[in-house]
Length: 396
Image (cartoon, rainbow, N blue to C red; front, side):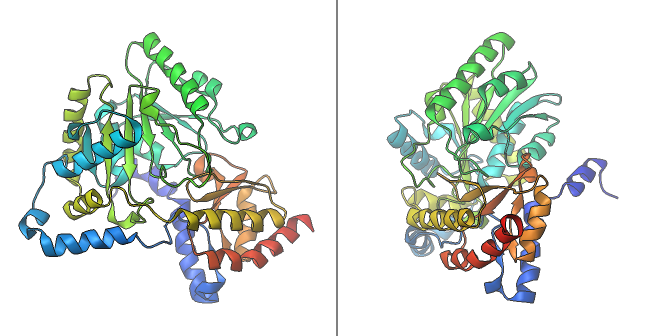
């Protein structure tokens, strides 16, 4: 017998993962080369060479006992120093190793932050469309999620007025994912400042901190002239959750960090509590080998030209087929408007053409679909005929 609390999770099991599994079944029937799986954000690039060089160094030059022993629950000091120094160099901040906690990816980082902040009955605010796990994770700690509706008329920049309407004294967290999954939108400095100004006023009114969780696994995946604002520059109570899953193409290796802004409310106590939260979550500490790898790859990046080319090619294919789409500026997703009100009907029609895409309702934004273009460029271009056939079904 399973816990009653697990029943809703089973009923709302990930549509994205289900589509991914469907793609594997279809590949066996039609051949992998004839199935165009745009469902999962699983980078098609190999990690950069610096990762393999680091692995070689660790295997041949480092003491195996050190490599495979427990570190501090917050991680190796040398790794945390590398992260802090990199942030300070890039953004003019003043992090120290003590402000950094190494985690098992960004998902673990966000859970550590939530465990540190939430009491049962607290609330968080998110902006649609958003990564659905935010709500699931908050429920782990008895917190509720308030969704600010999407703003298609502003290319899905978060609504400042929507945030004002969503706030109440129970709100302790606002999550900002920038660049955004699933839209590929980059929230501008003007938008971030306006949101932060609202939160500063709310903090004064409610008499307690409201933390921004800056979920930033796509920060380095920007292939336009747009700049991703560094939210701690605008708002003291910002806690960064980061992952190298996308920037180094290592989603299966589960390595990330929490960065607590030095000027945040009672930062020292928050950090101490977050370190304990990291331990009692069952993770104990981030994988030691992965910490040592990213320490040596702190400046390494994925091939942005790969994503830039894929974004341009898929956008061209989709729009030439007659569909409306939002040109992505970051991350690796194309956000496509469904030609029919029920986007699940559109997804079923796409599947008939062996195209696998994800419903916007999975991100609390029905009427749209997400296509992940981190697959090979060859697969994207082979999908052109299928998208054209799909377009003919709707536009003649």
